[in-house]
Length: 489
Image (cartoon, rainbow, N blue to C red):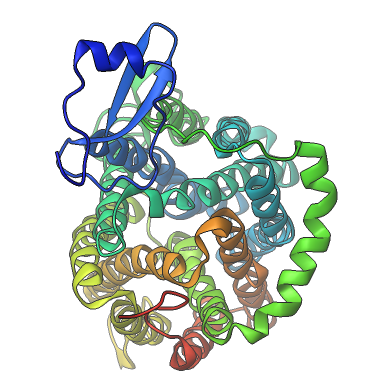
């Protein structure tokens, strides 16, 4: 069979039992064989389609940390416990910012170590454990025994696990398809993740999270005998997120296999040489003009987008006086538009390239950031309204839909663009730098929001730094080559 692998006869299987190995360059589609892994007793074939679906399941498994914990359920719950929206927003900003600073420092070093020592999967196992432990610990944020420091520490452990695992799974993207296919693959994976987050959110709202009445969104007591007065229904978001991840990572670990590689240095040797190599690469980075500009651009616009996600729930709870269930409905709407437009954006990415998708999405999010600042309980875009009016709620729902749509497409196209800017043999290192770019200033948006909120005492004005961050990211895109380091023609 020209250009591929034909059927293996019984004799061929016997002769090739030991010698056949996974071929990472195979670009076969629609269930054709993409790789062969030699195992004792026979040859196991992994289809390209199955491997891609396994990779999708990481997005499905990990998305609830963003949807349920960072944005729509746990963040508003922190506001309820602290009682004051501005105080909660400031505390949340400082906590998330500190975790982001740690991630920024360690991510590129981990990428260098992984490229030198090999074995991305073992890193994913390790950071998956942190994800599960950190998420589960949020169960202990009880109203009658609330320790903000311990709760934020547990949250940070889970967040660190999620972010570091993402570095290694993103680095697998180029091996899943040809260059003109990875935009569609990335977008479909992001859309699949949004759907997972949406389903988890619906489960929380309908069956577990209690409102002020002690009932869930459909008017029942939280399942499993959870005590509404102790907020056990809402606190169960931590264990639910942990269990969700543990269960849905099973397809990933079963179907996504790393190709055997040539012998590499030991983990200790890789760790010893990681910093000198990273330092040399960072010194050389400004000479790689397109990559340097893209890392700078994404650093600012992703930080601003994360600020929207992190503070969206707290903002709605404090400014619009929404309950957890209302914030959850907002989350459902944002997740639906996020899934739809991540998929649409992936198709546009494959056809036009990631840069046009990124530019359009950043423009939309800049306008949305301005709009969010101009919505409050007493006015909408400068027009006074009655405090009982539903117009502010409707306007904020529309903003949420736009954030979900532009955010989903933006994040999908951003990791595709990173593949175009990277050298194939340094892919994990590149995504470590990408994580550094995403986290080097990830403390900036939360800390700026926390600081401005503290100084002004206004949640609305506290969100305003996001506008400037989006604009900086948009300007830096001018120096980004659409094809990056890839040769054209």
